[in-house]
Picture 1 (cartoon, rainbow, N blue to C red):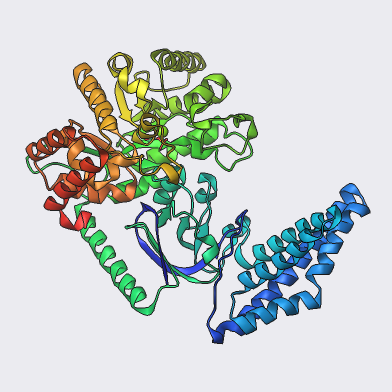
Picture 2 (tube, protein in one colour; picture 1 turned 120 degrees about the vertical axis):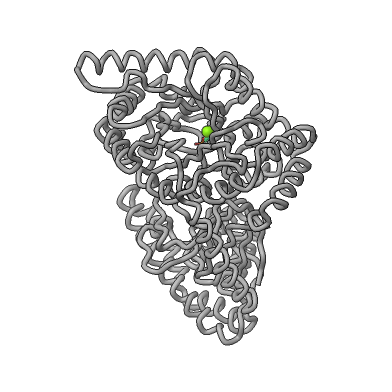
Length: 581
Ligand code: PEP
Ligand code: MG
């Protein structure tokens, strides 16, 4: 049994067989298998050799056709070697005599031969060693990894393990077949993590290297509540986790009783609790959990994984679906936030940039692609004729940029008016505050809009210069950092002064330890991942505003993220031990 610790990004516990996705660089540790499993191990080896030979044959045909037979011959030599009976026997002996796992035996044999070739002091033989490494990789890929496309055609439920997953790869996971996933890379507010929350798949990211310690089919536990992954758990651990899973489900079902109760403090201060969605159908999840509406619709997910841009009608269709579900409840539709870690398949919008998070992303990209921007604005305006729709611009970093967005919106309104198409002329316009410059200029921005939504996911990364997707800087990336709290404070004060609504829609607002702090800082609106709604509502209903204010005052005096987080955890635990425990 091995225990790995990472970052918990989507709650729940899952137990199941591992499906290891292909990884570019294999590092094979010395691993043994039980004696009674050795026969199975040699069978796995034979299968992997056969599959690798078949792939090499395909390569030979394709390369011969494209480049000529002499190049195809390189792969013919690979086939010859992989099918060599002596090689298979050598690896098999190592498995049977030493008890090694197939992966390690393959690696040992292939590397020994490669070393011998490298030691022959002549260019030709040394260069052949590269072929042996190539063959090693091909065999290991079949032993260890499965191709990413196969995740969409799963027959049995699995736990997906991978070095990393992109947001669009995550978006196509089927929650009925993928019980959980765990990745070596990734940070707490990456869009991959957000997708896991949307799909309600338990997930742990940022585990560091562990993939090569697992074979496909190994039993794995993913604890998305505590950020723990257990490989090959023993009987006792398995039983303990089965019990945890049951008690978690019963806590959740108790929270379900809050559905129809308002999110208000014990002293009757009403807080609007909204849900964040990526897909139209998620609006139903928000209502099922008792939310007051949708506080953030991340519309870029209409683009991810698609070859061509969605048409105005497709946009409108998605927005109408949400409105039908929500009835009279409000929805904030955010214009496209493409770029950085969220790319459309359409490469037109994928600039080659050195610093994509600081580059042509989001509203900057839209302002350069006015057709794209206007198509979406038309659909949002048209949807506004049928419900409580609000429009919001992401990643605004200057007042001028916001004014440009509003100007284009005004042009689109004029077009619709001329065409006689209905829309709400008073459509409320808001901006995200997720760049430090916007937080600093909140007073000026407040004069331009009717609401703010604080995007802490980006605000944290830009304030602390810590990539939200990079596990190596995850310790710096904290919502409790005093610098981040000071910026939030600035924004809330500016909003109150100028009487514009203010909401927090980053992942911070769904983390129970920050609820007291945010209420105490003056926030009366939060927008969270749907499955977090009951928990956050429970906390809101368990405190008085006075208590929250005291906590916020105390937290604002602390100087490090660690002190802030420890203090908030302690205060939340005092009020609701089952939430933090
Ligand atoms: C944020 O940055 O906090 C936010 C809500 O937007 P996204 O996570 O989509 O970047
Ligand atoms: Mg953002």
